[in-house]
Image (cartoon, rainbow, N blue to C red):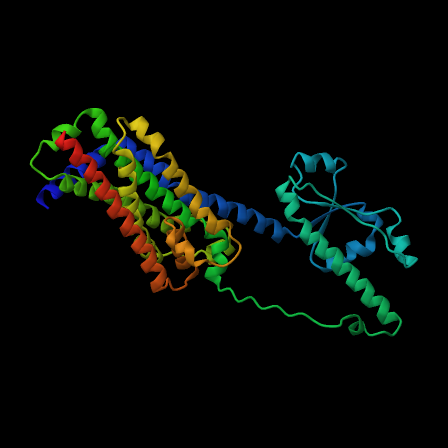
Length: 387
């Protein structure tokens, strides 16, 4: 193990000396998650600010004093729609849907007829489209109030129109509700580990071949397995260091969150960061071995980058299965690297127990990947040393 330790020290120092690559990895991997989280909080805060304004845009509000009175009693301020509201909605300059009132609105109500309101929005205008549901609920409330008053004038109890009443109870705790917005955090941690391990793995294998320093290294009396173990440990350490920085970067990012609701739902502290590290550490070691195994047969870094593109693509797409899957977790998720770690880190965010079976399966898969990758690289180096 003395030879492995020597190689490990040398490779780790070389990796840390490459400041330009480390800076790129830090900016692209470590800081990307907090920046996206802060941007998401700004978006949520803008929606909260719009909800607090409680404004409704009406075209022809002067023709519907009954409706405007109802809206005022609900705490909403009625704003007149601009003349070119359709063009502004298409250009996303108007951030609220427009409720168009017909000229005979009050006359139709007096004749006990049903006037037709027009709700104008643009589905491509995300801000305006977000307010459609609120306007629909307000119109539905106005209809219920009118129906209740009409029944009361005729001496009919409004309760006769309701066969059953519905009460709601949400079983999700605040942490589980928070994962609807913060569920992307595990993805950014996985990407940080991936790109942290990628540069180190390519440099210590294909980079050695391209620089012509691999053959002199194999002339040393150290066994090829010792050399591989040292290189693998160095790559794993760099990946784990990037993962450590990525996990703990979310803690100060909470101080910059905008919006009270997201700040209250986002509960990520030292405990969650340590659990993230415990979950991602075996994957970092397995990923380092896999990338080294793919790159060891390449003669240049450029060729190795093309060869590892499939690994990068798989690690990028597999976590999306958990994000896009609307159903419950499946047992096979824990047998798939990257997807298993994403699922376990999501459990941490929800405040749920990880489960011994899930941890054991994911750990066994990572250990098998690391063992096979290290053995393959050692075999390739052994053959190169014999030649």
